[in-house]
Each structure stands twice: as structure tokens, then as C-alpha cells.
Length: 170
Image (cartoon, rainbow, N blue to C red):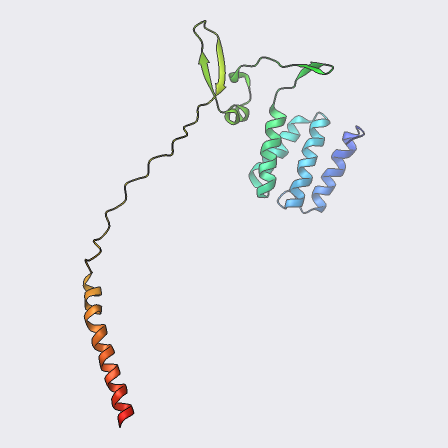
């Protein structure tokens, strides 16, 4: 891919994906991520997006995360620049693809002049209140079973010690 031979790279990555066990294995998923990048470079963007959407649903967990990130990058608008200087296009939030809108987490602000801007959504730094705990039992109160055991256990211990004493004496 570094030499600009994207068509041959697509063919090789397709073979590599098959040899690695398909997109459901981790190695095969990694090969399919490279395949999606090669498809995008070869201007087959629909195939690249379909490949990444498949990985998002069915791939290995780490490959799913990478596919989601790569899909967001491929959905981003292209930048038009001159030399070292880049002119960022003005975009409205409504014009961006839906996955990118969800990932940005911004809120719309209308200024007094009527101009609309966007800023990062405010975060609530206070933790959510915990639900009230159920009342605990009183420390001194025992259930019927515990009271029975409290009375019976010393009697059983005393009887067993008595039997041991009798067994050793006789």
C-alpha cells in the first residue's frame, strides 16, 4: 500500500483474511481492517464501510473497537488544504454522518446575535445519589433459629464432654 498499488493490496489482504480464518478470528479481523483501509485508498468506499460494519457486529472484541474507530475516521469529512496550512470547512452538526454526531457529544448554543455554535456537552461531575439502604436488624435481636442454637449448642457440648470423661475414667 505504501507504493500506491492499492488494487494489488486489496487482493492480497482478501487472501490474507481467508488464510487467517475469516473475519471472526482476531488475526482475520486485523487483516480485514487492513483490507478496509486498502479499499478506501482504492476509492471503493462503500465496500470499505460494509467491511467495517461487518467487523463491528461480528468480529473479535478488540477488532470491533478498532473497526468502530476506523469507521468514524472514514466517515469524517475530507479536509481541503493548501500546502502546510489546512482550511477547516465549516460544518453544521446536522450535516455530519449520524455515527459522528453521536460520537461528538456536543450541544447546540444559539447566541443573542442569532448565530448558532456548538460546544462540548456539559458533564455532571456529581455522582448519582445512592438509593437508601434497607434498615438493618438490631444487633441484639436474634432469630428463632439462632436462639435455639444458642441454647442447644452448650448442652450438646456439655453432654459430649461428659461422655468423653466417662469413657476415659472407665
